[in-house]
Image (cartoon, rainbow over the protein chains, first blue to last red):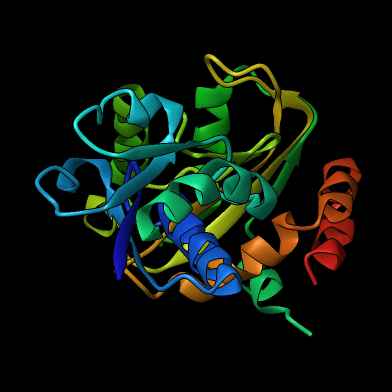
Amino acid sequence: MIKIVTVCGNGIGSSLICAMKIEEICKEEGIEADVTSSDFNSVSGKQVDLIVTVKQLAEQLTNYNVAEIRSYTNKRKIKEDVLDKIKELVK
Amino acid sequence: MDTMLEKELEGKIVIVDQIKDWKEAIREAAKPLLKSGDIENSYVEAIFNKIEKMGNYIILEPKIAMPHARPEDGVNETCISLLKVNEGVLFDGEEEKVYLIFMLAAKDNNSHIDILKGLMDIIDNEERIEKLILAKSIEETKKLLR
């Protein structure tokens, strides 16, 4: 199973909403994924396959496989921004 | 019918025509929650510090912001408020104005999930967002949150 972490400033608001959306997307696509949310400070050192976050934070997470999203909540936009990267991981 | 959000926002909706800047907007959105004792001043300061460090992670969607910090930053009760700025307010570095500011506070990592889901139902619906932005009274706003 692939491990995806969504990241925002706190790990309980924006990123949690985003994690729920990504769970829905993975389910629809028949992809098994463990999706959790995290605050920016605790993400370093985590073993993850993909980090999903917005531009400002993505720029600071250069050592990771990062998918940059334009919105934390708009499912259509999130899907456009992350699905290709997720599909690459399950190939 | 989901009236959870409406209930949570009882007495915690503020509508203004305009506001000086985004910082003032965050302070204004915090007022009902400070008054009810749901959050401490430190929570508002934490939001400012995090925005300074991490940018506008609080902007969920164009036009909608959800300022929030962490449970340990000064939360007594899980709560939410809504500040509507009729003319909108610009956050630093953004191109589009924010009109709806939902300030969220969670006393732990999961007690606010129902509120978040309620909020998602609202903001997933673009038509409803437009109506909310145009709503002129608290009554009208509350109806749209049903």
